[in-house]
Length: 122
Image (cartoon, rainbow, N blue to C red; front, side, top):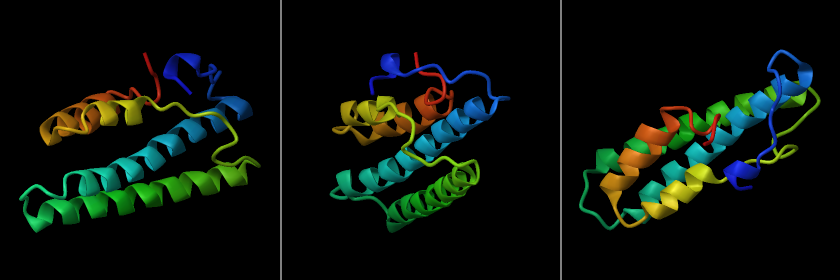
């Protein structure tokens, strides 16, 4: 969904709010896996050190672990990832920076993700 169309999550202290918050966090982690893999594939033609790509593989692996842990917690609460809608704000930003590695590195992980945009869009 577009970020502006996302429903409000409610209070995190309620069971419904807790599930919504965990779902939002799982969505962030899954997007992080996708974006780490995308940055490897999209910019693989650049002459960068092997360590650069190895580090992104490690990031994808760690974010996948985080997603798995959050998914398990959602199942423990009788929910699952995908039960609630997610927005594509971070992915949209990655598409806007698909042509420029430095822009991608600045906008996606350093600005949007770091300031919690995924949890509180616009």
